Image (tube, rainbow, N blue to C red; front, side, top):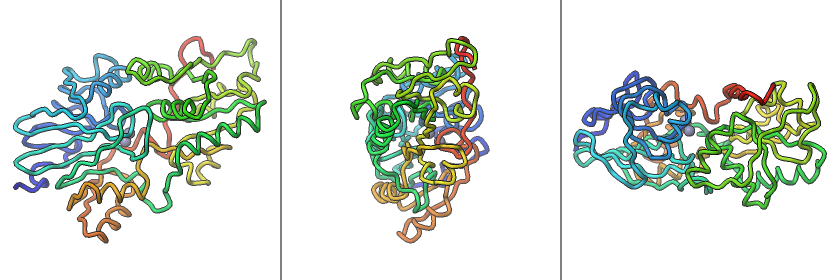
Length: 356
Ligand SMILES: [Zn+2]
Ligand SMILES: [Zn+2]
């Protein structure tokens, strides 16, 4: 059985499967790419052939534009397999965002699982993570420090609703990532009984619409109204407003009634970080595995070897060594740029008609 190190290589474009002649989540345009999910650090534009779940392909078309989401696209449903140059590729759910998949790669009796980004908690907006036994498990390590233990997301949604009861005269502005976190938080609020319209910044509209089209109900969503007169404010007291992280620092926010600035991210565990970003109500809601879940997952897949793409690889590799697992840091650059990163990207510019 060939060792995966002899047929899965790290190249400047990212992780490359030599016998199958494809990259997984390549960082630059390549002839053939397998994409785990639609976050921009994984799904980049202008590849030749792209293989991904139908949902990820739809997300790529929506975000990158029809012309830049791969010259040709091959959809593979979760649980289905395809053959690329003698290599079997199967996609299994990663539980991260809608359409997110682990790539199960088999060649000559050896199996590598590239998990992309993943989480183990229930998420009403996507299929749950399936552990797949393998010879090498490729994992991220975004929250690979013992300090990161995520509370139940349902409890964090309840904290937001409690704040709305306490401060009915203030709008509640929650900073979220446009893909995944936004829709998951909406679904959690719906499950908790919040059936009023939820107001969303224009930068979130397209992906929320797409989730609806792909069969994930989000209830009634409304755009954030423009103030009636220039410089007017005081809108949406007692309502929930979602916006891309960073919108709270733009003039757009002045239209809202004395907003309680909230943010939903795994990083909200770090108090200084919440404070530095001016977040009054930090909500610890993450779409990544926490420390315990990373270690539990590495144990469940029974891999003698774990490759760590990015994040706190040192801590994870060290902990794995203590459990008899060989860890290897791949130091893939360019990953972790979109979701759950300390330096969140600037919000998308507001569409025409929405004003500042
Ligand atoms: Zn991601
Ligand atoms: Zn990522």
